[in-house]
Each structure stands twice: as structure tokens, then as C-alpha cells.
Image (tube, rainbow, N blue to C red; front, side):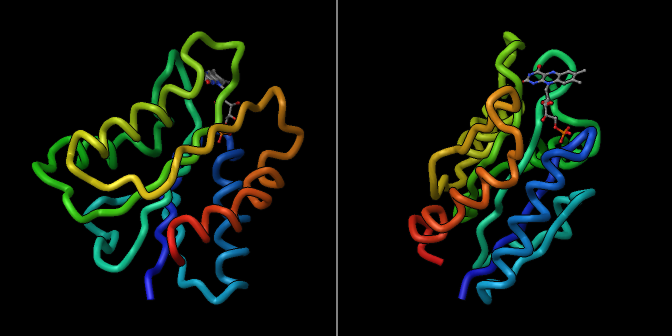
Length: 148
Ligand SMILES: Cc1cc2nc3c(=O)[nH]c(=O)nc-3n(C[C@H](O)[C@H](O)[C@H](O)COP(=O)(O)O)c2cc1C
């Protein structure tokens, strides 16, 4: 059975909380899950797993700081063929650079040959009182579409 590795990019904790809630729910459903709050590329399994990349956007469309070493490692990879991934992005539509980190990480994984197993979920913090609730409501359809 496939596991899920949740990789977190978060500056102030919102994306981290979304990721924690999803991890808890997946676990309760008997799905093996690992949460990476300070992700180190080489420490994360790539076989029989889906990488769920859950990141906010900071600065002017930048990745959160805790994600930068991971992104650097992904940039250095020649080929991520066979790696399954999916993205959740948290952002704020009052920025021109809305959800750029989520969009850029999605493009980056595609450019390395990884397989996107579901459409990106974008959470606009202006619409979401509790982004974790929206993510939890979305989770069953995600589980179904990725075949867990
Ligand atoms: C200084 C600052 C810069 C931000 N820049 C962006 C941005 O460029 N694009 C965007 O979509 N959201 C931006 N945001 C909104 C955050 O992505 C949003 O509040 C998110 O929920 C924060 O999640 P986190 O607590 O996990 O870091 C910014 C927020 C702050 C405080």
C-alpha cells in the first residue's frame, strides 16, 4: 500500500496546521503518513508513496524559508521520474504573486519529470476562516482520485 509524505512550507504556521490536520485524518483512516516540517530531500522515501507538498507563499511570491533547502535539493535533481506528487498552496489574493510558491513547486516537479497525481488545491486565506477545514473536506476526493 502507498504511503503519504507531507512536505511542509510554512512561515507563520497556517500551512503547517493544515498539514498536521491532514496527517491526523490520513492516519485515522489507516493510511501511513509522515509529516516533514523541516523537509530534507534525501530523507524522504520515493517508492510506493505520494508526496503531498503543502506550502504557503511569502515575500513577493517566494517560498517560505523552511522550504528553501528542500527546493535547492529538488533543483539539483536531474530526474524525478516515477515520483508521484500533489500540491496544496496557501496564499492571499491581495498579492499579485498569489500562490506563486504552490504554482512554482508544481512547475518544478513537472519539469523534473515527476507525476502530478491530482490537481493543485489552492486556498485563498481571504476566503478561508479555517483553511484546515476546507482541506479536510477536500481530502476524501483526493484520497479517491490518487487511489489510496
Ligand atoms: C509578508 C507576507 C508576504 C506574503 N506574500 C504573499 C504572496 O506573495 N503571495 C500570496 O499568495 N500570499 C502571500 N502572503 C500570504 C500568506 O501566504 C498567507 O497568509 C498564508 O496563509 C500564510 O501561511 P503560513 O502561516 O503557513 O506561512 C504573504 C503574507 C505575508 C505576511
